[in-house]
Each structure stands twice: as C-alpha cells, then as structure tokens.
Length: 71
Image (cartoon, rainbow, N blue to C red; front, side, top):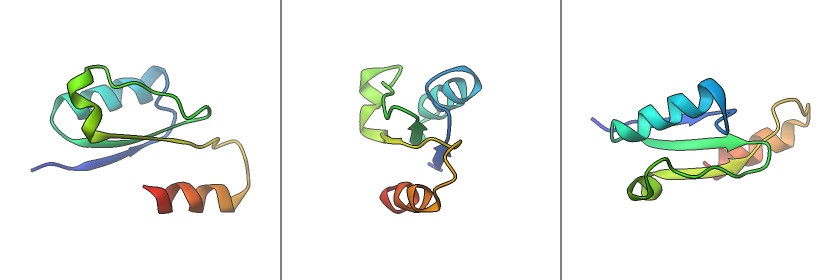
C-alpha cells in the first residue's frame, strides 16, 4: 500500500535518506527544505515528489499552515 510521507529537512542528512528510501519503496513524499529545492534521486520518481519551502526555525505559524495546506 502506498503512503504519503511528510519530511522536513529533506535537503540533506537523515531527511534526504528517508525521502530517498520512501520514494524507492514506491511511496509519495512531501519534502520540505529551507530553500524549497530538492531533486528526486531518480527522475522517474519525480511524479511522486512535492517539494515545498519551510524553515522550521521560523516561529511563524502561518508559514507552517501554508505548507501543510499546500501538501
């Protein structure tokens, strides 16, 4: 069964590894990064990837709501 993963900090480290593993397993991923930039590890996975900008160090609740709404 396909799942949708919401991953913050997906541009590097553990977040990137989890996003890559979820995509490789056939799941969909909403990946957030501070810059809003993230490429699917495999171009054939791009249709299951939504990348949104989100800085989790910013206390602005409206930014969080907008990102979740977009997801």
